Length: 376
Ligand SMILES: Nc1ncnc2c1ncn2[C@@H]1O[C@H](COP(=O)(O)OP(=O)(O)OP(=O)(O)O)[C@@H](O)[C@H]1O
Ligand SMILES: [Mg+2]
Image (cartoon, rainbow, N blue to C red; front, side, top):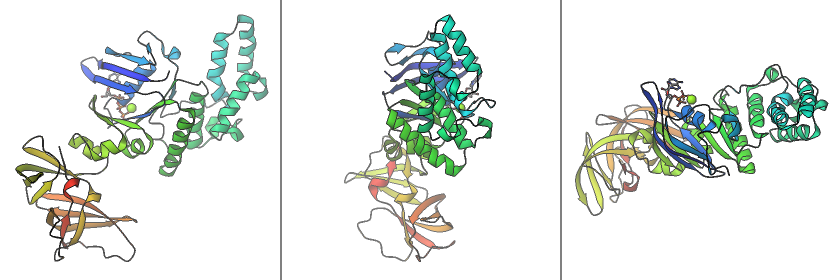
């Protein structure tokens, strides 16, 4: 059983509380991301699950087993670190075989142990017992490194080293795979392809995975569910689409994707609409406000921009006047910064070739559908 449950976990270092009452329920086979800015407690949470750190209070279950008194090497967790932590003087095969051999060694009788120990010292592929050799080669094929089995890891590219680290964790057939910022040392292009590799392997094996990152795009594109952390707290847990379309706090709205956040006051409730006023704008939303003072969240891609003199459909509830202060051509989209009262709103419009791009100083009208106006 590879589910992971964390109940009321806190962790303090001296006077400093790094984790406040963490609760997580990660299902078997789930790809779960811990997302948050630097210092929010992601690694500490992971280290507590792995057994490298003890929670100050609370409990952790891996499967049905409460693991408080279970040492790290008995928790059946595979770990992949940001730094890979490979042995540079060993080749790819030995790096991956290392832990398997140790396990074999621990499990064997003393005479067998001696002979296996001899093999461990040997760097020749053929000297490993067949079962270890086959298993290591199988996993190396899986991460497409079988052709490099005899290369020193110090001679590999970043992406290849990353795959060795992954193979080394997977070869132990852990119940839970823990990955702490595994892609952050890779360049942009490689990160993208490694995301797919990791996700495919995870799904193929159905292995419960906790993936730590501060990169929202990474978390959103890979995970089944994401827990967003801030200052040692979990602020929201949900699927990527949940988090994007229903952020519970302005912090999440900003951290998960780009948002325009405006301060407004509820002026009226009419015909199922919340009417809000703020500096330089009035907006209507079909969403309910919990308080009189609200944070109004509008995603850049939900705003349309038109010249100030264009005739707007009278059924359009939200029309705001503004002035373009910057336009940035990004290939498939054009991003505008538009001054509206005291706010600079970000507007993303799809760009079709030959279309006119509004230049700095252009007076425009912005429109946004009422259901796209989120209230927190
Ligand atoms: N051993 C320790 N002693 C004291 N403080 C610690 C220790 N380990 C972590 N902390 C503190 O706990 C907080 C959370 O650290 P953690 O490493 O979990 O953050 P993180 O979310 O992984 O950040 P990053 O994205 O930078 O890796 C930080 O303020 C950190 O300084
Ligand atoms: Mg960390």
